[in-house]
Every structure is written in structure tokens, then in C-alpha cells.
Length: 378
Length: 98
Image (cartoon, each protein chain N blue to C red):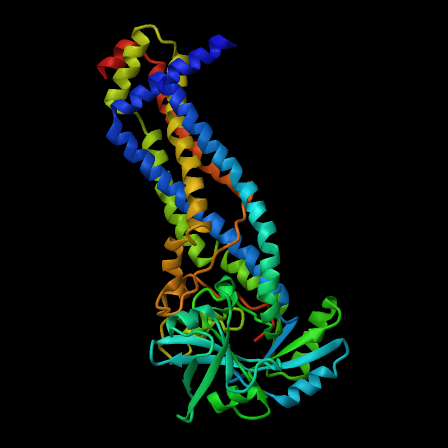
């Protein structure tokens, strides 16, 4: 047992010395490998954590949202729809929602404005997201000047700023009273942006949706499960962001593995020849190459994954933030709650470490089985 | 100290850190459980339908509420030009819905 350990340690010692002889090449290889693993693991952590947050946040979404379409475009819903839908068996509540977008000409930001019927939300009073407060440099008690659609100013007092920990829900939100909402957007009375429908039994949702669609052919019911599915599919591996990072990282990895698998350099071939001529067995040479693959790939995997965890959960994924930010003026910096999916990490390990190590050993096995003299003369 | 021992120590340290990640994640989840519920309490009555991931375009701010054709509806030859639009794609509606 001790002898076997000693043999491995000696071969590992030789492997490290051999790798350090080609220091620049191997360090750059390790750096690139680490970067690929870092990107893949960061994406994995980012997407898994966002999926979890989406599932928690959207559990409070309405059971069903009913929109109205006019000429294929979303339009306002008349109040009459609300009363009619409330009469459908199984529907417990229908709440007209008033919400829209406000473009701030001062800083070019888009805000989401929602009306709340909460009695705490008084006229000319607003609660705002941390992103809005930051972009307009506002504090509680300050006045936020808004310009209504008929060009009259609407001054609202900031009564509450949502904590930055709720940025993933409310970074760009301005919550005002229904009266202020109507004034701000010159919104027609008796209309709503859409209707939030609550249904007693979730199993009845498709039936209720079908009844609404048949009673109001211009309506579009969106079920809670469809809202949740939207976010699951955005962060799915086929989703835009995931696919771009995944494809570029896997392509880089294939180039690495291909480079290794297609053959050895003349120097490496001569080294194998010399080792065999001084008495090394083929199995020793294979073990040497196995350790070479393990040193590079395992180090890259472990360090890349740990660094990715720090990047996503301690630094709020600045690399992906830039991609999501686009031209947004308000970009929420959200602190994600860490999630580690052991299955996905195991998959990452078997997709990166195992093929690389195999790709290192196979060409070497071909070189190690030929005559040492021929190997040295190659 | 032998180089091989140094390498094994480095690997053992990285492996320990790696194995600590799930434990840290579980601990953070337990700690944040109450926070999320508290954050949501003030916002629950608003019944939000979307996450605030990107604010540059309506259809990336509220992808669950947007039409699939929203990026192209401004005029007949409109092109999707917001960067986040290439990352946040709308889902296909269920069959039979407009």
C-alpha cells in the first residue's frame, strides 16, 4: 500500500516538474481551462439561483391575468368584463389592475408605475424601488416630480423606499394611488390595464380560462403556470443567454480537448522515448500522462467552480449583469441566494475533467507502445 | 516540502472549499427564507407577474405579459434592437391562444 502511494507521489513529482519545464504553455492552458469552467459554472449558479427566486416570487402572482386584445395589440379592459368574469362559477375575486410605464425624460429611465388600493398609499404619496431612488437621488420625504400626459406636473412625496434586497421585484417600481395613476396617464375611468383573477380551485383554472375566452373572444387569459413557465424557459439551456455562454464555452473546451487528442508534440514524444529507454514501463508513462491531465483539469475545475460561486453570490455576477443591462438606465443589482445543484456540478465535472484527462492519455498510449528508439527519432 | 505534497495540499484546500459550497448555500437559504417572505409582504397585494431583470424594453421588463411579436410591432419593418431582447426571449403561447 505504502509502496503504491510512494509510486504515485514520485510520478506526480515528475509530472509537476515536467509541467513546470513548459511553464508558460501549461500556465496559459490552465488559465484558459479555468476561464471556461468559471464561465460555465457561473452560468449554472446564476441560472439555478434565478430560477429558485422566480419560483418563490411568482408563487404570489395572480392565478390568472386577463388581457384584452384589439387588432392583435393589448388594450385596456372595460370594467364590465370584471363583473361578468366574477359571476363565473369558481372565480372568487376579480381585481382590475392599473399599471403602466413612465419614461423619465431627465435620466432616460423607464419606470413601472402601479396603482395600489392599499389604504396606506395616500394621494400624492408614493413608495418607490431602490433603483428609482438611486437614479433620481431620492430619500424618504423628498418630492418626486412627474409630468402627466396632459403636461400638468404631479408631485408625489416619497413615503417608502423598498429595500435593495427586493430589487429583483421592485427596483424600477413606483407605487401610487389609483387617483394619481389616473391623473398621471390621463387614464379613462372604468378601464383597467388587465384583470387579476383568483380561482378557488387551481384545477379549475383551464376551465375558467376557456369560459372567459368563450364569453369574451377578444380576451387573453394568462395562467399562473404560464407566467412561471416563461421564467423557467428564459433560464432554460435553450434560452438566449444560457445558449450563448454554453455554446461558446463548450466550443472552447472542444478546441482544447481536440488539440490534446490529435497528438503529442515532438518534444513530448522524445520525452516518452527517453523514459522508456531508461526503464519506465508503459503503465508508468500512462500514469504520468494521467496525472498531467488530472493536475490541469482538476485544478481548473475546483478553482473555477469556487471562483464562479464567489462571482455570482458574493459579487452579484458583474459579467452577466453587463449582458442583461443592455441600455437600461435602471439596472437592479440583486444579491442572489446561493443554490448549488449537485447533479449539475457532477455533470459539469464529467463533461470537462473526464474527457480532457482521456484526451491526454489516449495519444500518449499510442506513443508509449512503440519502440523507444523510434519515439526518440520521431 | 515535496512539490507533490504541495500540490496535494492545494487540491485538498480547493476540494474542501468546493465541498463547503453546498453547506454555505443551505445556510444562506435558511437565513434568507424569512427575508424573502418579509420583502414580499409589502409587495404581495400588488400581485407582481414578472421579475425586474432588465428595464430597457417593455417586453423584457414584463416578458410574461408581453406578446411574442412585441419587439416588432412598432411599424411593419421594425427590428428588435434592444440588447436584452436577445437574452430574454418570450415563450411560445399555448395552442389556441391569440
